[in-house]
Image 1 (cartoon, rainbow, N blue to C red):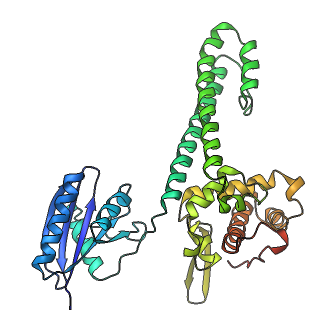
Image 2: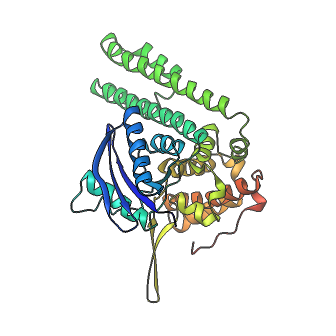
Image 3: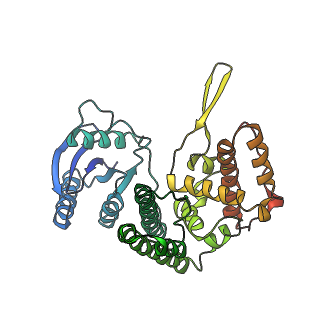
Length: 357
């Protein structure tokens, strides 16, 4: 029977540390470091191949944590013929909670758990989804910059004795009219902020146009946009962070992945439902909440939808915040069915919710 070697790799920005163990638990090359560059990858691969030959052609399996450069490292090693497992760090706390945390020990821990085949695997999205996420992240940063600039403008106006309204700087035209009424000493300060804000907003629109261009033929994004209140940004966000709907066995799994299901604790005959878990991508959860808020703000199109009637009932019974979260969970279930069946949004086919879920 062919022997197996298990390699734990502790990745960092400039270098990585390894530890190799065999099926008997003997360790090799513990603490050996390689630079995070082309020469380092080649040297590591050569060393693994030499170890394999030394152990009668043993197969080599590698475990790495899910870090920013995990995809890059995995692709290189898989191209060289090695099997690579990317570890879900959220579900694997052994490394972080270690009392003696060193690169060498972290690599050894990964190797040991890989040998036992009990490492929780992390899903790395497809390159298309990864590219969309990068564009969406850039847009999010620009939106945050725009908000910061508006807040700064409000603070400057207040310092000069002007009381402004929250939405007063929302459009370029309203900002231009405001500048025309300001005295020179205030205008010269606030004008710089507005010019920067104009630039940030224009670049934000450029990214949004890019999203439309690269997803114009994407059937999943177009399908999501049939839901009232979902525009191009949130449709792309839901698609990019869902990546592959077929990896979820049921709508419950998808809602749990969105982090919109409550914590559940059971003891004897007692069952306690807590706050939502907030597990999974924050971007996906935020997009679903934003979609619900948009639906609430457009009653002319959504008032007759069953999901909105349930929202208003929950709002009256509990609060608007809890109602929004509960409705976002219902929306995740609707989206799951839509993407699974490739069926456009239809309010008549909404899933009846189970209050215990």
